[in-house]
Image 1: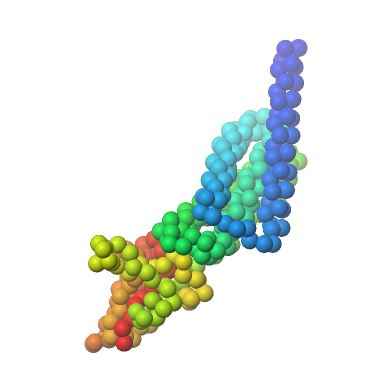
Image 2: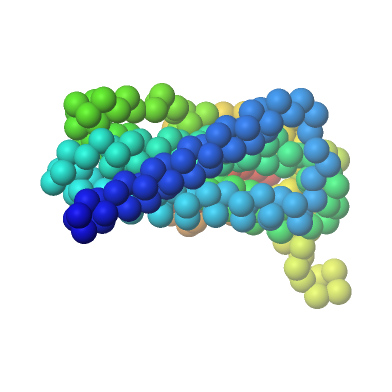
Length: 286
């Protein structure tokens, strides 16, 4: 009787956990539908941008917690072939997928709002560039979680299907994020043109002396030529002089000269070159 009581109590606990997980999944589905249905861009600020990034970080932490629990439950599944354990695993996988979809939607919204944020935030260029870097890190983390989830479900699929549990629909969130991470922008122009189009500004120095040119984070992406990082290796210059304005690690690029002319710009180490910026701005002098 005692054994039966313990078993019954355990079943009730698993049942309640499954119901709670399903409620979370349904709630996340509603939030995801709501995010997708937003047709107008919300007014954004640095503060709510940071808040949304914090929400994405929390989603990633919840995904990690679900991963750990599924790993524990997988051992129970191997030992017991319990259908309720299988149901719990499936519910947690569904929860992870909804958390990933929620994070993806938020990342895409933040990505679309970047240009608006630049215009609203005036001279806070460095702060906006830092937020953009955090958004890229969140995208990369989410892509890694997608790959881990795919590997996890592949290993569990046969066992769960044997117990009558169909895995939740596979939702790929990685492709769009990978495309975003692969975006690059470049602009080649003379000093007057860079100044006129407000692509660069001057920072640093003492009482206006010794200031250096840096890319203006408020410059519109429409001014730049869009490219893909994995396909961009050379830019033709054919100028008397050329200077790289954007910040990229030394040794990851080179200027090639032919006589007195700077003929082209080569990216020699793409992984290093794109670490700090998605933009290339080169000032030429003809």
